[in-house]
Image 1: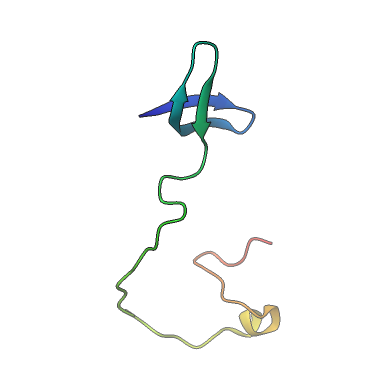
Image 2 (image 1 turned 180 degrees about the horizontal axis):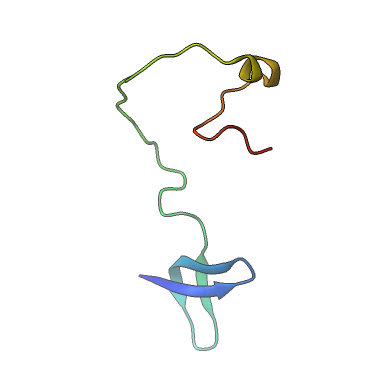
Length: 67
């Protein structure tokens, strides 16, 4: 069973592990944590790196970099 709780980081979905008389044990990990995931991808486009990306050592998304 899952529930939404308020934490210092805002609302979080948790998995209820055990319900006792005075305490509930919860798991705050993402539901897919620890599972093996497989993805199928298709490259849609390839472009040359910009001078700025080469200088920074990484690609920048739409709108430039934010660091």
